[in-house]
Length: 129
Image (cartoon, rainbow, N blue to C red; front, side, top):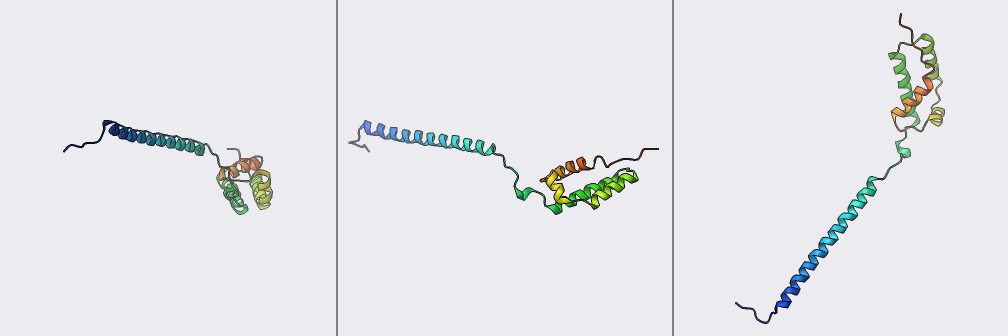
């Protein structure tokens, strides 16, 4: 069956139109991909600062401090005077003042570092005989 009345130029312009649409679609996809990469890069570069929700409460800090001192008392070969000083510090511990001076705390490691700074002078070990 022969189709008459259709010129070759109509066929080529239709094919060119399809090719143009494919190129346009490909260009849009590439632009979308580049935008996505830029957005990912920007999102990856963000740094979130700790919020109040991440900070330890006073009761949590007090518990960590008690555990820190108890571990020193039970695992170290301390002098009696040193044990007494650490126990006295624990008995008079003011958690609000501690947080104000050394906090706020977002991890146990931060509390331990502050406790080391506070108690380093109180820790005296017995000499091996």
